[in-house]
Length: 138
Image (cartoon, rainbow, N blue to C red; front, side, top):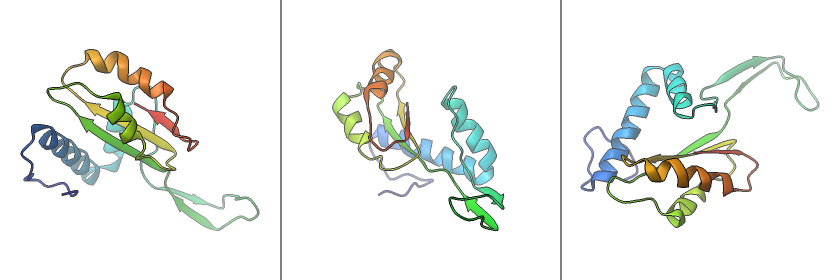
């Protein structure tokens, strides 16, 4: 069941919360890619991702100058939700292995308890190196 649904088919509260978060992100992006980008960048504090297509004309590449180019920076957001328990560093490490060659890698942890989030997860993110040359954000 990897497709998000308006009427989710999950029984576990964490999966319902994740589905609703993805549904919110999806609807926001469908309504306005600009507002989606602003929302995501607001979540990331001082970091900024380029969400959306960029149109360029007559931009020099390595050896030639193509007439036009349509591109998009790669990014991936991996979400983990915990409603009643704490995050496990082993589980987060496993989730980080979902990243491949994205320019920006974001681990979004959703939890109503913030004490663990404020100390452990940012520290974990600083020590994690995916080895892809991209930027890793939490």
